[in-house]
Length: 202
Image (tube, rainbow, N blue to C red; front, side, top):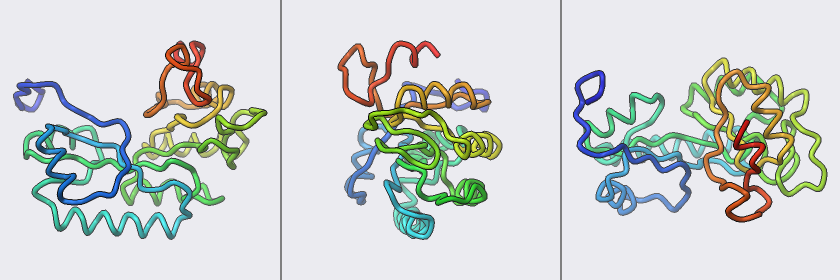
């Protein structure tokens, strides 16, 4: 039983990261599978205007399939999705490209529904080093300021594709917990973006 009286007859089911060709069929499959919330990739390397276009597309999907999906903005929306037999969709970025070189766009994108942003996607970005780079310089000066702004507005720092030092720096700089939404422990498999014991302990 939740604080607001919602009886949970089974655990909440949240998909930490998903990307696909979204359709009514997939939305119905999520409902059939009891998925309460999904972190949806709406940007890989798109810039701001392209990302806004992707958000516009999702707004139309919410209109057409409001009986199956709903926008996810806050933790309470996961419970609301369960209550109304829908799936809450939380927007995330695989890269920091939507903010271009403008920290002010962090707040704008959060207002448009973004809730997760990776600081790098495998390669070096303006904010952090990706896991495929030979040298990891850590979080950049701009990256430190962006993390502070993300903390302020409530945009989750995701380090799934970032390198070791950058990830540890982000943990140190961030005043809120960071997320690693789609990577595994390196002790399972030593892939480039899987996370070391040091990161897991931090």
